[in-house]
Image (cartoon, rainbow, N blue to C red; front, side):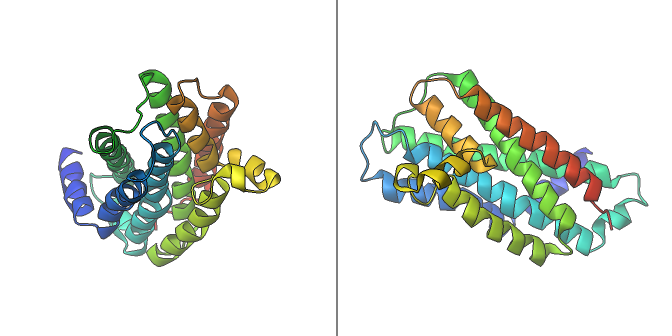
Length: 231
């Protein structure tokens, strides 16, 4: 398991998608953050949600579907390293990548941009864990249904942009039609973004939205497990 983790970590660091997942949210934060007041409570939660969304909807499903397409999962089934171990390692590494991207955003926002950072750590951590679990569940379902890595990539992109719009990541929700803003709040990415903003404003995340993210994580993970093919 340790050797597998080391090998997968090396592969992940060479993956262009991993670099994009780190740099794109950071670029958005720096470009737009330079013209926003330090007390702003919208931009940084948006950037954090973008970072997790890119990892969950793009990198994770593309990697897993590519491994199946190349027969890596099938070949592992004949070795002491079971395919399930690879799945666990990938989930852990992708989680660390998402955590690293968010940590980088927080450091740059707090030191360079002088942005407002929340003081309530536990609500923020719970929101991050549930939001990441929900987005990763969607990514695993994409990997389960996509016939190959290219298809997983395309499906992830096609899902990301509508979800990002509904979540208020491309346009502020107060400038969207009320019905779209309301629908977007109950999507995985929308619930995540809104819960992060609640934490940033000093309040507690909505129990309903936390439950929405948890429900997505559980229900979609079950569906992904049902449809997932190792070869």
